[in-house]
Amino acid sequence: MRQRSPHRTGWTLVLPLLVFTLVTFLAPIGFMLWKSVYDPEVAGLLGQTRQALAKWQTSTGLPGPEGFDALSRDLRDLTGDGRVSQLALRLNRERSGMRQLIEVTADAIAEYDRPLLEIDPRWGDPDTWVLLKRMTQPLTARYFLSAVDLQQTPQGSIVRQDESRRIYVYLFGRTILVASVVTAVCIILGYPFAYALATARPRMQRLLFFIVMLPFWTSLLVRTTAWIVLLQRRGVLNEILVAMNIVSERSRLELIYNLSGTLIVMTHVLLPFFVLPLYAVMKGIPKQYVRAGKSLGAGPVRVFLRIYLPMTLPGVLAGAALVFILSLGYYVTPALVGGRTGQLISNQIAFHVQTSLNWGLAAALGSILLVIVVVLTMLLSRVTQRGVL
Image (cartoon, rainbow, N blue to C red; front, side, top):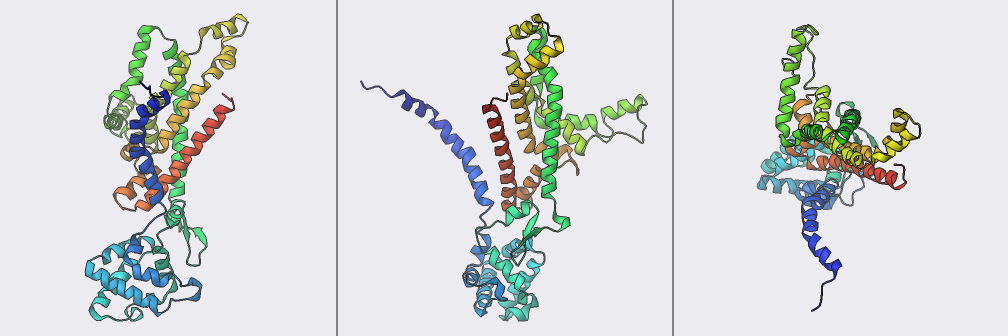
């Protein structure tokens, strides 16, 4: 009887996992990347206008009569289908005032069939037609430009957004800063805890394991709510401080619904993700190395710095990378305890997906966040391969 190749058998075993990964992970990421540069909505609504403006050079001023006629026919068709509001809302997202212009024009065409320039003089502005030409092109970079607070002028140059609309670069910076601070605090708090966990006696080790695993056994919403009860202005911590006369009634600490609350709660939630990888590395370090260093006359500090610490750096880097990457995309905790000053870029992504329904911009923001994570992963891999650790 012919035996199956071990290589073929191995692929057969992992095939379900590969299919699951493709369907639930790679396909959504691919859809997100495609959505960030592909927007066929306006092109589908203004098909005749798209064809008429395809050969129009924006530097020549207004388009020819065929452009005006094509737009009139498209608006007449959309009025009959009831899709004028869809077009108006989509264009108004790009430029304020377009909703009113489109709806008034569509109503006038349906009722009187008047020329566009007689309905509204704004149709004599070349910038309006430049916007229509760009919006009828399915492939676009405008979402990525908006995601980094840039915009394209009617003349084609790239400039910064108005100051009141420059929010995403700042939020990316705040997100990276929060992730860095949370990672640093996790290193400071988690390294001693992991060391105690790795060197403790069995009974104490079980207790420490219970402490580090407890957050995984509790719902994230429950943990976050507990922190709200503890840190709010009338919470447990402030009541204790006031009772001990450490702070006055009027100077209660503001520790929640701000950036401080985001940092505190995220550190608590993500600390186990740093401790466990580091503990696994520490547990695998032979005790003979430390004893050998001491027997050669090195003091405890020197043994730690020259022998023990370098051997634990792979665990430190793995745990820190895990915490940092998770912090970049954290959403629930900043949404619940961040308030106005503790919001991160993930909250804006959720807003555009759920509220504004601007999926293209949400996809562009998510794609930039994905690129940051991929770059960090590549840097981590390169550092490891070079033997720095």
